[in-house]
Image (cartoon, rainbow, N blue to C red; front, side):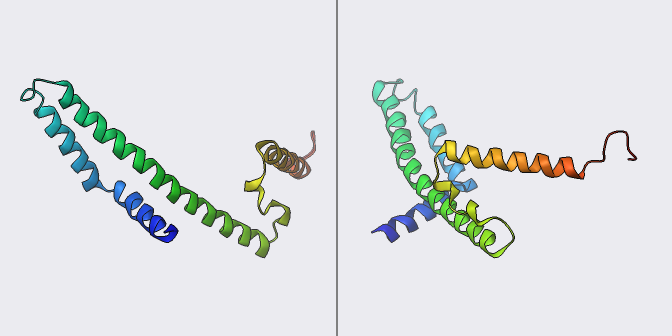
Length: 129
């Protein structure tokens, strides 16, 4: 079931971003608006668009979130492999699973290291440039 859901989520996420889907939605809304006078702008007429957009939005959110989760996990795995195979510090592997405070400590350490390396590379004051 999970594979079927992932496949459906991928298809919907790809389709939702296509121009023809946007055009179809635009035509649907225009059709609904044009029928307003026919139905005398009744509550049922309003309920149709409200219900339709709510259902579509509700379902799309979960499908797109699933796709984003899969993409994010794949990117993290690729970054971890690059870190493992390169000169980067292996301690950065898996930091996406840390708390915000723990990640901030890593960021602070990186900022200090960057400042220190830039300070060492900068010429001394009053010296030749």
